[in-house]
Length: 97
Image (cartoon, rainbow, N blue to C red; front, side, top):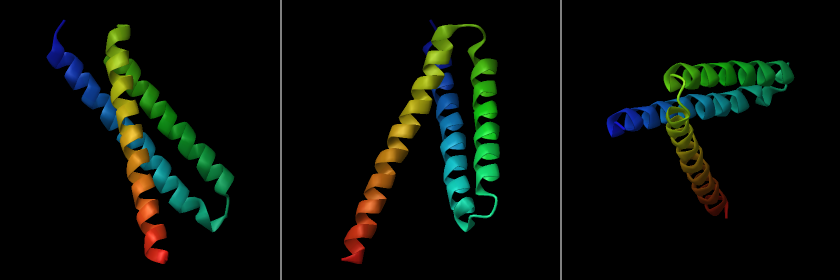
């Protein structure tokens, strides 16, 4: 087992997570105008999902352990961004008072 490879794959998963959740954030900001929002939301979801699945597939090279390293990186980014957004919304609510 080469740990450098798994560390690299973990980072690839993190980058895929940043791409996916960053794209989700941009999509939500874009569709606030309400004009054809269903189309943009679905198109963005489809695009982000295809890219992330393609990246996972290309880098896993047929080994489930490589896919697991990528998924762990992806989930770490999700947890980090979720906690970051909770902190930001708490600060915004505190500033409104």
